[in-house]
Amino acid sequence: MDAFFSWLEGSAPAEAVRATPFVYAALESVHILGIALLVGPAAAFDLRLLGVGRHRLPVTVAARHLLPPARLGLALAVTSGSVMFVSGAATVGSSAAAPWKLALLLVAALNVAVFHTTAYRTVHRWDTAAPPPAAAKAAATVSLLTWAATITAGRLLAYT
Figure 1 (cartoon, rainbow, N blue to C red):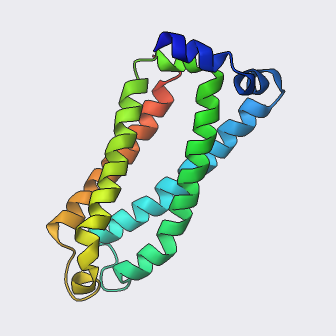
Figure 2 (figure 1 turned 90 degrees about the vertical axis):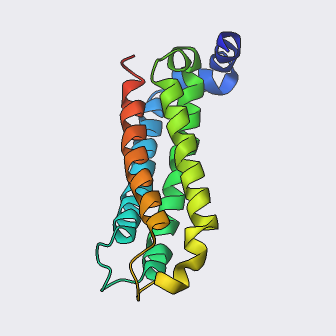
């Protein structure tokens, strides 16, 4: 992997990021904005699944309003994060936090996929009339914990 990371870091896009003033700082800003747009709405949706606002807001309404900005945030965070990674791949790739962050991102993605292909398919049964099922609450809990841990691992990339 070290050779691959060195190759990535020596690529023209990586060189451009490192050599152009303020590009890395702009990428960091976009990354933070993406994280905010992803995790803020996702956390609000997760809290709704855990019962917050149950009698005021149907789950489907929360999903319709909260998940599109979360998807936009994901696109911004993944794109900017990938470009930042390429510009310092050897250093970031050797960080002890890197495998944790990657694993946590995979857990988050699997959690979303499992939730939307299982519990959310029955949302019409529990949208407003009943509490969300245990599977939806478990997915919400995993989501909240995973995103908090992912952000922590991301910050630790610079220190480990």
